[in-house]
Amino acid sequence: SDLHRYVYHDGIVGIKRILASLYGNKGYVYLCVDFNKRNNEIKKFTIDALDDKLPRKEWSSSTDKMGFFALASSVKIHPGKLLPIYYQRETLEQLFDISKNKDHVSPLDTHDENTYRGHIMLSFMAVILYLKLNKRFAGHKRLNAKNALIEMKNLKCKVYDDRALIKKITKDMREICKIVDIKIPEKIFSPINRSVGGKKTGNSP
Image (cartoon, rainbow, N blue to C red; front, side):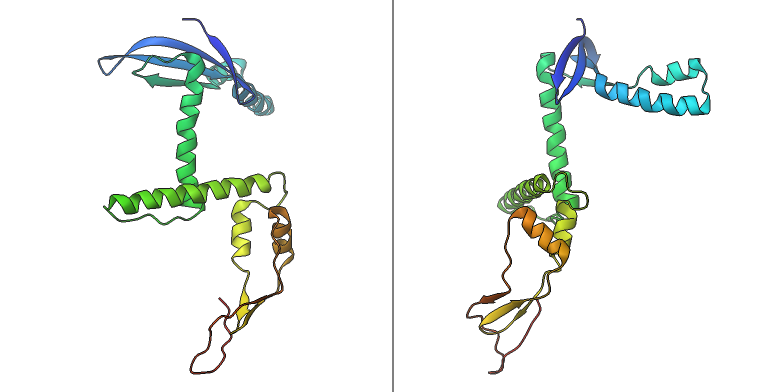
């Protein structure tokens, strides 16, 4: 079949489907070229090649395959539906990567199905929160969801029986609260039982 071009995520991708044998079984290989990525890679490589005075033959052989990639499937898929399916898989992998590496959701050593399902649900909730926070910080020069969460971990308070006094709030904390539309009071009044042996105690959780 001929090369078909599709607009996806503000980019243009060309796809050609080829009937192929996959481990002895009928399958399909989808040859793809991301024109935006190809143009960017060739531009960057050419600038470096000019500085290094790279011969044209070497430049040509190095740039021929830039922006190209191939996908294989045992299922015949319409080329126009291929990319959403592929990038959906990639998105899921990124979500679990965020949950594991950025949100620090601890892995569970369990064989109980209900516990595992609960862990998956909490992981998705953490990922959704993280992605929403990242949208709030989009365009900010210094802050993003990751360093905002790290900064807010340092928010402390002094706890007494009837109140909690918020400790010093940093400039970054104020900026973070402004971005996510959160107001931090100077003190919180609540009947908190922090007495030990009839004496009041002050703590900094």
